[in-house]
Amino acid sequence: MDGGVRLLGLGDLAACQRLAADREWGQEDRKWRFLFSVGDVYGVDDGDGELAGTVVSTLYGQDVAAISMVLVAKRFERRGLGGRLTRHAMDNAGTASFCLTATEYGRPLYERLGFKAVGQCTTYIGASDGPSRRGVSVPVEAADMPAVHALDTEVFGADRSRLVDGLPFFCETLRVVRDGGGIAGYGGAWRNDDRFVVGPLIARDAETALALVDEIVPEGPIRLDIDHRHPEIIAWAEEHGLRPAFTTTIMEWGAPIANDPARLFLPVAQALG
Image 1 (cartoon, helix red, strand yellow):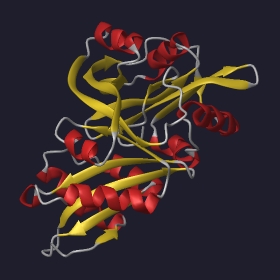
Image 2 (image 1 turned 180 degrees about the vertical axis):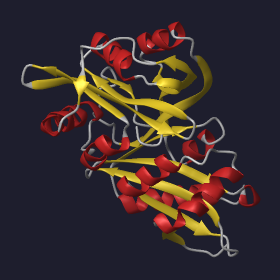
Image 3 (image 1 turned 90 degrees about the horizontal axis):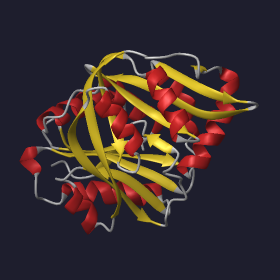
């Protein structure tokens, strides 16, 4: 390996995707580009023009950072590179709290670093016939964004303004439920390779959340990453013919994050919370 951890740029995107392919992950071009726009992507060169490993740190205000895309090339496994990259990202973020979603394979690494499990998430996949109703929500408008931002900060427990500001451009569908002068919920869907990811979804209650899902879900192959604390969304997925693909562990490090999981129904992506 070439040694030092360096901050990557969009010029390294193809190398990141080749590394992901080495780990049998998808190309995920849209997600990678969004991560580059809202977070810090770090990598270690392998000395032969490729990347030996990557990690992404997405800072939410001064208090919380999301860690994701911890990838190590197969030929460099079991040399401590994943831990080294993760610690580098955490040291450079300098926040009191961190969150991530761990695969079964990656969980032991994060436990060694001091992360604790706080929940589980099951990914459901299948096909959708498209929105089953309209009328509860409306397409987001620029005037809605301050209220969307305020609701997101309140529910997530940290200021995700950079991420939220990017959602109208990242999501192919982004709708809100207006409640008098405020926002009762918002939800979106975005294309990831050959399927749509349904999320984010934040709402005041399950009824509003289910109405949003019905109105934002696109036609075709879809994916929902569902926190086990939301059986009503799991029931919706099963009723619509989706099936569980895999389960991951939601983990946190440091000071407890003052979020409200009861209103956080679907993440933007597992990489972002």
